[in-house]
Image 1: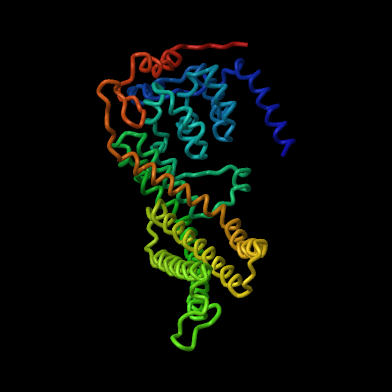
Image 2: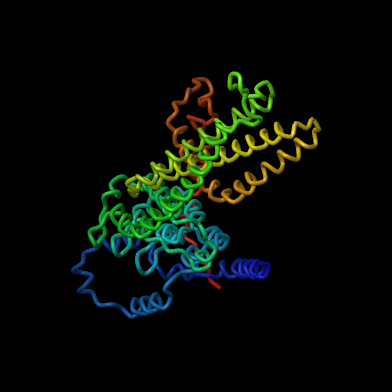
Length: 414
């Protein structure tokens, strides 16, 4: 790992030296150049003979399939991409031989850090989001054409359900970035972005469905077993009952109240989790259900299951304390520590899964919060959440500070 890190830093340092001397991006066309070529008269283009310069340019273009900017975007070298755009900002609008711009490649290879950096560039972003490749695919079509690098794929051990959820959330994000008419835009195969996404994600949807069913079934078995123990414990009262009226012998003990409350809560959480897992098993497993509905149900079911285990172990500890009737403090502490050992192991094992599910809950809360109306302050021009509703002239000019850089023509020669 250390060796790879040193190699990566050495490559970045070498790239910082070579980037100012590189002009390979000038070989490819830009978005503006291609639009002018497409709008030209096709008859004149076919009848016009190619000059020697054009033939040499096409030959050189064929030899260089990818520019360093697009290659760094594909492999995820964010530092190199950032440095290239700092030295040659106009290179962001250049495309490869397939007509793909930097946004196409960033979305296809899931390099979202590069996408966010380009998204902050106001002027080129307006043109790049309208760009389609030679097959008519927009940047929204690229969401359905996910390609993960081999190094990333070997280290990626997430469940298929979460991978599908990430793709669905990315599709929703890109849908908000592009123009509305691109949602129904079809490529040369006659497929919209949504149809292409559904077609290519069908194998992943089937894997996600199988994984969710298997997880829900296993958790349901555990929940039913805990519910059985909690239900039986309610009829086997610690200390027994009085023969006269059948009331518990240890009714006035404080730990008996703790035992009763925790046992009832354990049974309640168990039955709740069983109902939730059954709702997952009987779900229709539509593609959009994997975006929020099914992950949230799984998170709620696992939460209830963890709480039921915790309450059951508390009831067990309270029962043991009632039976031994030892007033020493260290005995109670030792019993609680031993009782919570299975709960701790259970929580640690399910922690990665639970953290992934928490991301879904956080996204949902943020989306709900975006619909909450803001109360504006007329004097300061700000809402109660601190956002500025009326930006100043300085802020407006700062947001357009990148525009002159992309209008400037740079030629760097060695």
